[in-house]
Image (cartoon, rainbow, N blue to C red; front, side, top):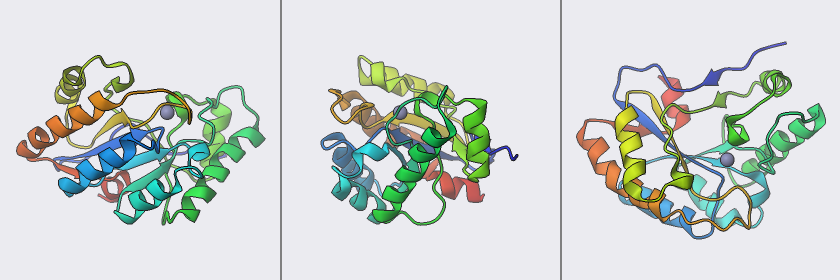
Length: 209
Ligand SMILES: [Zn+2]
């Protein structure tokens, strides 16, 4: 049995951080985020829900061709606790396959739905040689009532090697969510973070250091 790498943040002296977005693609918000990132010439990492790939394939292909990293966030966004080995394997493999079909190259890292896993899932991910990417700068953007609360949380925990978690969509394909505050917060905090001397990197770029 092998234990996978579980990464909450990256030990690095250089002022670099990762911006990560979970649960997409979303037909409205993901393109807005891509546009904003392009404007600042920044790359982010998107943890993709496999069941949404077919419908929003174009967005995903654009994301990959623009140099963003895509990670695996499971197929159905169901938590991996009390699930069979077959269920977990299917969640991971199916999503990886779809990501590859859209152009994903190299290693595909994994973030468990809800950040939760059983020991069984952890060992299975170890066997698959998957790196598990958690976060150390939580924003609770999915329940924020304004963009300032998201900004305050990022500001408070900002540090070299930090992994910021945000959401560009809801859990399910038909989840009715509004990610306006998330987008507003990122737009407002980017300049501030750059002024502090930080650069933005994808998870894989950061792990190469
Ligand atoms: Zn999620």
